Image (cartoon, rainbow, N blue to C red; front, top):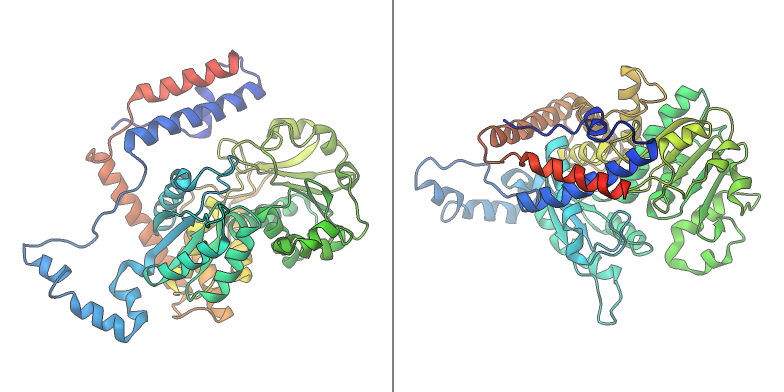
Length: 485
């Protein structure tokens, strides 16, 4: 079977050996985009719906549909929780977006987000054994503006069919209202992966980075660059995990967040930003270079780079500085440049560099754990439990400046994460059922292995055909041409 192996070493080897590090970084970005365009066209997307029950003769249709299935309807009518046992609801997540902030590309129109949402469902299935369904919705109202209430109503209407909802790529400030309203008013978990998911995995990476640098979380100075849904939630979780708010400064496009930012206070839609203003930056610092002088940690989720974060800023940071440059699809500064400027540990959101701090390490296990206890919500404590679960998994393997996080091919991390999240859900009182930790761990691992085995069979039998070799070579040629022109 033809296999296109895109491991980090093989990916680097596709390009001329005389490329500079900057050229190599640009070439990989261009290559992955070119290959993605052709691969999506070749396969017609990434997901398909298939039965998981068998047909053992024609009359089995009468079991799966009428008349036999009426007993399922009446049983669920009399006990709504039976839907988790008698349908796929208990393992099914709706991936909901209005596509107003897709990666670094902004508003892509409702259907423009389908590639990302299908990708989310793809990762859920392969990494967590969870079924996902992409649902991109039109949130425009009659005035031609994106209306958060339309998304809220849509999610409330669909919740009887799903075990959880993953919100994705909804622009701020609408994302705050959508998440906070649905978390309280729905009877299933509603999770905003750009916010809580990014917050959880970033905390996981920070926990291990601080362990390596031998710096307690309560003593470090942390600068956040960017104040969107991701970074404000990251800051909230890091503060909950023990960071000292007096040593934290966050920047948006207008400067530092602090109590004198009347513009933020006046715009009640940005209430999450105002919470940061009230809690942090007591000295009202407005200059990023002043904030970074002697800082231990920089966490950037802002404008895609590579020149958004300047090397000169990093040179002013404390010894053993930690830099997370997590803008997608291009980090605010490339890792090699950050290291040259003196950073000790560098992380990005991409898998073609060491230390990928990406939601993919969080949501498959977190959602699986929530589903297996039939949770009513995902609390912030559950997200923090997931962060420590991921960090501890890597620590047991042996962390280093170039390995602060597990990678997606370390299957057991998702089962461990699901189990830790499930136990925290039970502790928080949001679980409908209370399996043991081992039951969640083993059930998750079995579902992941089953998902991967099914995909392996489909590939081996060529129901999933291998992409033609020229697809890879054409993408390489386009990337090299773009970089060398």
